[in-house]
Image (cartoon, rainbow, N blue to C red; front, side, top):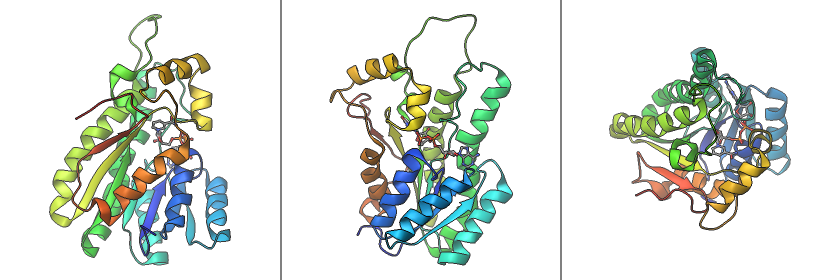
Length: 258
Ligand SMILES: NC(=O)c1ccc[n+]([C@@H]2O[C@H](COP(=O)([O-])OP(=O)(O)OC[C@H]3O[C@@H](n4cnc5c(N)ncnc54)[C@H](O)[C@@H]3O)[C@@H](O)[C@H]2O)c1
């Protein structure tokens, strides 16, 4: 078990890919804190882990609120004694309103998808520093790379590009945080998943666009949520001890970085 004795917080762990990270981390031996606004679903994930013999705690958390993020970190330490891993997975994705082109909405999406990453990282950092290290994993997206965004005819004016901007900035933030936290042995890496068949994707992405995206992939497939968990385990574990500031694209061969 790659994560034996580690304590991991997964924000947005109540559903979709976040839920899959929680279940896999628990199977790898970690105690898992399922942090989300959707508290009933978070509790269900924690119960599922406990029923399988693992350790889990559901916490109501709003990643945009500093007090809430600090409470999430302190409750984790109270219950499990430490924080080894933070997965900044929470985002406005299922709830994305693609038709909303207002600047107010752009600010709302950036607040959760970008600033939420910084807020939660700041909340766990003092604990990781005190312990002598930790691993922060930011969830970006291949939407950060415009060559993979779906093209469409412009209706009126430039849209607000909220989701792509937020995920592109997460890639940048990952590098900046890695530089700052390295001396304290806190590693910061990111995963950029390609289109993954969660309820959110089925809701947000038109079926035709999904088919077009799939055809751009070297492997010709879309991903299922569990396809992403191995990379998260690797970045959470000591196997990646000398990696920081990196974004790993997991998308069946659509974006070729490097
Ligand atoms: N599904 C995909 O195709 C795909 C592809 C690339 C990247 N991603 C990213 O992976 C992550 C998970 O994707 P998903 O498909 O499971 O999305 P999802 O929308 O189903 O899950 C996001 C979770 O974040 C929670 N959340 C939203 N705002 C929050 C807040 N302010 N505080 C706390 N929790 C909050 C939601 O309640 C939800 O449980 C997201 O960061 C998403 O952007 C998804």
